[in-house]
Length: 252
Image (cartoon, helix red, strand yellow):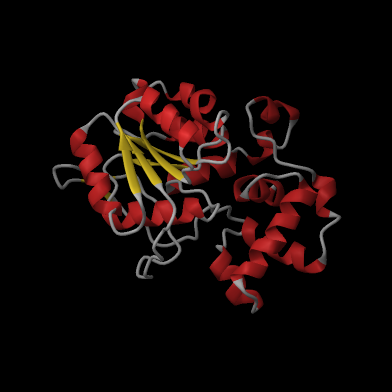
């Protein structure tokens, strides 16, 4: 069974600053579907003015934007203002991505962080997603994909590239073991699956298959709000914290 954190579509490529395609693919539920505007604040963090401008131009119609240019300013902003999604330029960490979980994710667990790398690679992305980051993509991601990435992360989903998704799948067995837990990937309680209702089991299986809330609602002829309510119960019973962990548990 395929584990897909974002609903699967054909591969889509990012575009670099010179118009060249970068082979960092991201997945979205429907490349032609209109994106619902995002009301909550989106914080952009990059010391590169050109990158900041690029992100602002991509997101200026989907939410209230604020920008900071240093890690210190980012932390101060997160302490003083309620922010839902934060875009973090990996260059701020001098490419030392292993500092991000302790510096940001653990300190601000209610914030969804999307890390954008100038040269994405799967090992880097795997570590970040495994330690609390909700999205990982190319620094020069296209406007349409950046909007979709923010929307999906805001909805509690994970945004990763296709090749990274396959690596997550290949690590299912190790993540389900005590050794996997040492690396920060607790997959939840298998016993909890037995506590699920019939409807909850249906929804959990669809999450494990990579379906979005919208797709699940269509397949089961229920509302997205009902899907979200069931997911909250599923997370509680299985001791998983998000779709990624639930998907790993189901597939393991």
